Length: 187
Image (cartoon, one colour):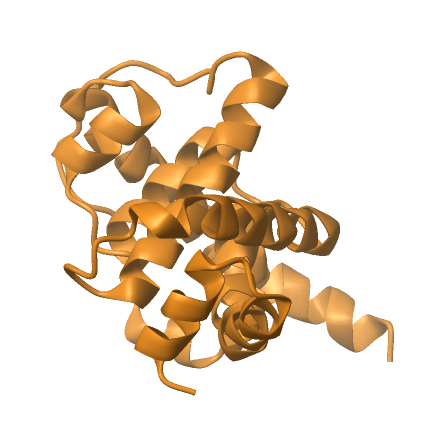
């Protein structure tokens, strides 16, 4: 079924169309939820909450812009709202002056699986993971992130910088010679 048909049916609260919309987009929105949630259970909860919000507000979708993009925005906002409510604030560290962008050697990145990189990202503190994902993975600007998270643009930049530093440290530690010795010793 095409999106226009699904949207029309969902606006009438027809379960057949709601189920079809869910089936069509559940995987895409689940992967997105995984990026913003700490674990699988949180991502599943976020997916369900997002679809409830989508069905509740589908009448507000005007048809302008991407429908999938509209649903992704709801999914991201649900994850951010959950973190805000769970910890009161995002405990965001204020602006820093930083000189250069952290870089990681390409050869090290080629040795690490995508699932390991995603696990390292998920392991970042909430405030850093949210900014990193919004900026690097979903192409939001620092101004948009600042508005979404109720922080300053400078804090968004600072948290992105710190996220990259932490990721660099974690990746280098993962690929350090001492780690390889421990891996080989266990075999």
